[in-house]
Length: 140
Image 1 (cartoon, rainbow, N blue to C red):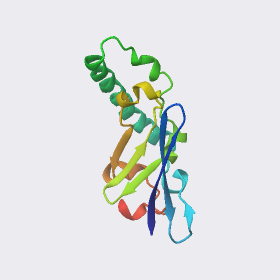
Image 2: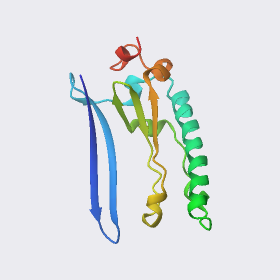
Image 3: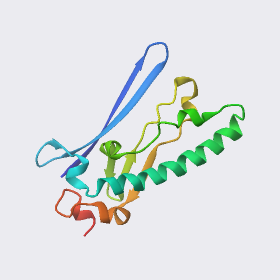
Image 4: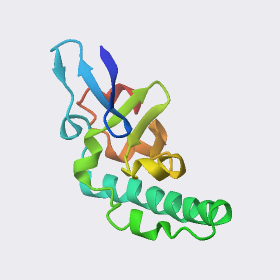
């Protein structure tokens, strides 16, 4: 009863441009699934993902410093802050949920951008999943 859709956009102007958006559809209703319909305690869930994001940023910064020692990437992470708003961009499968964050690095250094994919298994998500919601069956 769940359809996971990835929309991939590609364009070109001065530079090539790509973007991906993910949406989950409840096949019984045909409606897009919003985070508040399937998760509870959104602030705590966003904080959990934000912690993983901070670890990714720390690791990515160290890796970039090794490859490009003269490049100060800290400015590209100043606005990186996973909030409840970003919970809407996720993908689901039988193992869990991947929350997706786009850092929006400029094209010239896009290759250095971290993945921005934060997977939580159903066991990790159990405290955050609404039992009566579409994902409830995965955490019983």
